[in-house]
Length: 165
Image (cartoon, rainbow, N blue to C red):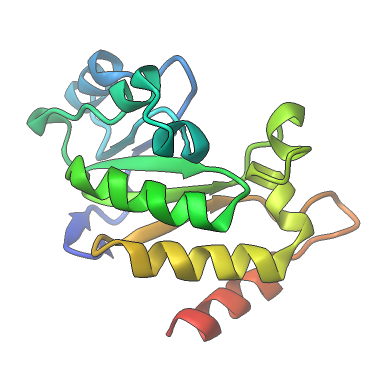
């Protein structure tokens, strides 16, 4: 059995990955009916969330039949990410997920998503602040590294564990 906070999942759970313009409530519900153990919202831009953009807030709408469900956040500004974690917590998801893995150029080149892998100290600090901002479990979606010459996952895992616990 896999346990994330109070969420109990089977030994080999099936996760529905967050996908922009795909993982809306209807799609998540259908995936739950067909065996997904855990689903996630589309990824949510922290800057849009703290600026009260209606389209972004719509992504926080959750239904009971989706549970367990996580809200995935992305951004490059530590304060905005911490504030958005507080806002997302109010939507009552089962967890908050941080996107440190999106390779899309317009996201990564701004230092968000996989772009955070270029600044591990900032990534660790951001993770710490998000954990402080919510009472929910916090998970991270990432990659092995920025590219095949810069595989930082072991340092990243060690740094986050040492700094958070």
